[in-house]
Image (tube, rainbow, N blue to C red; front, top):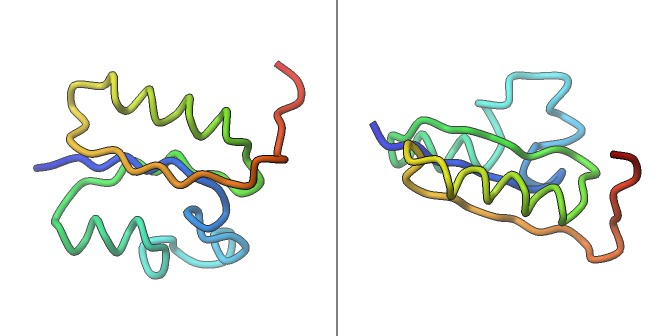
Length: 83
């Protein structure tokens, strides 16, 4: 089966509903994965920075088991703090 990796922010993770109901019901990455019959690896997180989105996307690109990577960038003013 094909594997799809998605990296993004709250638009991708489904926030704020991600904490209240199963994500499989409403997020666009899940709907795309279901439509194309793919296993989904969702690396998205609400409030994340572009740097983290990029890092997680590169992990997917370097993973030989992942067939497709979709990157959904956030606002340029978001920065990471800490290590």
